Length: 310
Image (cartoon, rainbow, N blue to C red; front, side):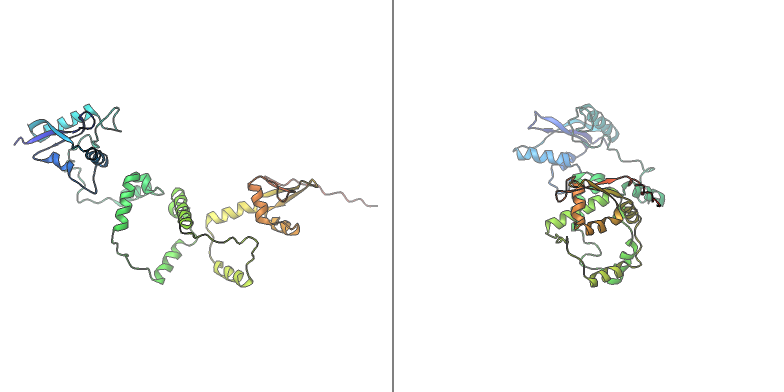
């Protein structure tokens, strides 16, 4: 029976230009006007709300009636191409997302089918290290996060046992954030943590000039004993230990070429604060009005004075 039609929704606040084209039967067009908290087409829903805020209602017209379903689909596609989709087609004005709304043939439908392990791995690799916003867009990401916050998962109101916590901790021990989540995601997590600490005033007092007690040093040593360092940590330590610095006394014009490992002892012998001296290097300024420190590629080889036998 030829009971299908193609309809247009018009915007009375914008010269009755069409903003949506669809195909259906009976009262299909009215489904767009129902209030919903989770619309599939957010742009269309937002425009309808804007029209209603102006005291108007979208107007609908039937372009053609008494059609076969296949013919209705063809006409719908033709009209969508004619008017164009906003942000999809050049000069488009429609809020339609899809060009062709025909359901997929049964031969390619995935209803009841499962992805292979290889496909799952490809999908996982494609999303690894990306945020919800990068994958779904800002609005959809916020909606998914809200759903996740309101869901009652199996752990809601429960806590991991000490044994489970230890197992989870052991699995991640020695692995950096970057290795676990990827560089971009790790950077985002660290920034979120920093912002959370600032928001909740979880700032830690500075320990500049304060030394650990022997008891604290012993506890720290025991806690780190036997714990393998991550690859990133080892690489960072190696890089720091290989640095060379040139320290100049701008008053006496005397230069000192110091390896990074000997720098704390140099500061102690010259009554300098190591942290403040290094900060002066980062800020490119003179420390205590006489000390200037710069990082150099390699300390020059200073020849020893020849010994003269008499």
